[in-house]
Length: 120
Image 1 (cartoon, one colour):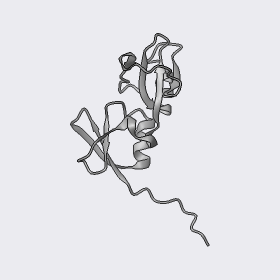
Image 2 (cartoon, rainbow, N blue to C red):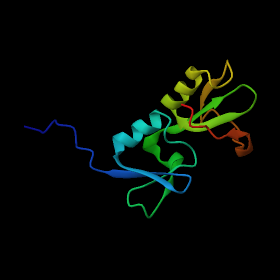
Image 3 (tube, rainbow, N blue to C red):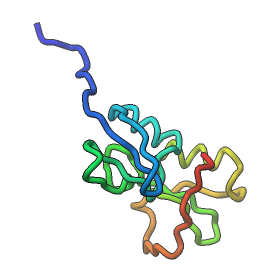
C-alpha cells in the first residue's frame, strides 16, 4: 500500500531584514505563511545556512509576484497575493487601489515602485 501521508517539511529557512535582524529557523510552509501575512517584503533576504542570502522576492515558492497599483502609476510590492489583498482591504492604500500581477505590469519601471511597508 502506498504511503499517502504528506511529506514532512524539513527544510529550514532564515529571514534577514535590513541586512541585520535575523528570524528563524522556520519551515518552508512557515516562511510562506510569513509572506502571506506581509512579514516578508521586497528587500528582505532568505537563507538556509545564514551564509548565502538571496532576495526573498526572487524565491518562487513565496509567490511575491503581485503589486498594489494605487491608480496613479505607483506600484507597491512585489508581495505575496494574500499580503497584497490584505493591504488593499486594510485601507492603508488609496481607495480604488487594485492588485496586479507582475505579468500584467507591461513596462516595469523600478522608479515607479514604492517599497511596501510593514503595514500588512
